[in-house]
Amino acid sequence: MQDKNEIVRIKEAYERREKQVPAYLYSYFNPAALFISQQREKELINLLKQYGFNQLSEKLILDIGCGAGGVLRELIRLGANPENLYGIDLLQDRIESAKKISPNINFRCGDASTLAYEDGQFDIIMQFTVFTSIFDDQMKHNIAGEMIRVLKPSGIIIWYDYHMNNPRNPDVRGVKKKEIFELFPDCNINLKRITLAPPIARAIAPYSWTICDLLEKIPLLRTHYLGVIKKKC
Image 1: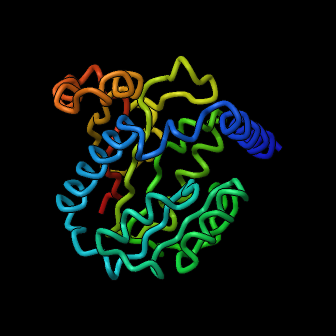
Image 2 (image 1 turned 120 degrees about the vertical axis):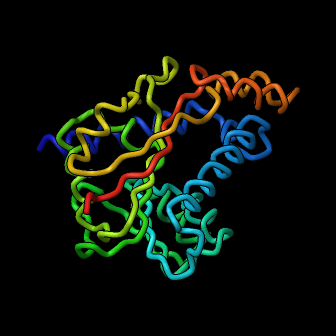
């Protein structure tokens, strides 16, 4: 029952936010959104290369909380095969949009705490700003456990999420490094702070990307962890 209550709360939070937040905030026509996206993509490419995943065409990849599939489509540009890509999201409307835009990707509406995939199925599993939207600790642990279950022994989990609270959005809570290690015990975890604080990027990016680049080099101004989680051999 607790998970069901949390699912209802999450759905309601996203419905509220969609009504309150203008679409332009996350549009690539918004200089801040474009800056944040391109910086994150650069870091993601470096991370994939670092762990030997620079050839994606044969890799099975799952995106937890995939939304309308934007991150998975980024991977197609990096060489991933659409038929090898999978996405799951709680929100039916987002999955319907994802299927319409990318009918050759395997999208599913559902709860990631009970994944309908085989043990050790995926080479790469991603979660981008999902865990900050979950307040229930047990649900977080269930999802983390499922991610580990469906990950190949040689595979990696890519984590990208806030490590701090957003004072303007009470429906999210930052996930600290200590909690990430608790969610994935018996794993090797490598985390790096990235992403210039969005309010700062929104204030400065329309005028100067150079200043944004300089500010992003200051660790205290980076709001997210990007990292890799691997099963211990």
